[in-house]
Length: 65
Image 1 (cartoon, rainbow, N blue to C red):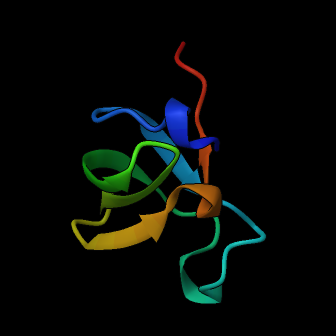
Image 2 (cartoon, rainbow, N blue to C red):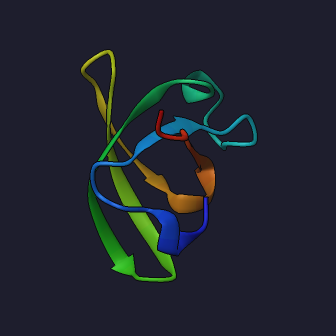
């Protein structure tokens, strides 16, 4: 995901290339973003109720239906 694509409320999936293997493939929703607009850190609320901070490049946007 590019930094400018990361919008609060967007549905995302942790990329297979993500640095944290235990999170790969999990899905959630962006709840907050911090940092530079081109290189944001994103707070993601996962479907299982956990919350985790990711860099934008660790996530893939899930297309809306």
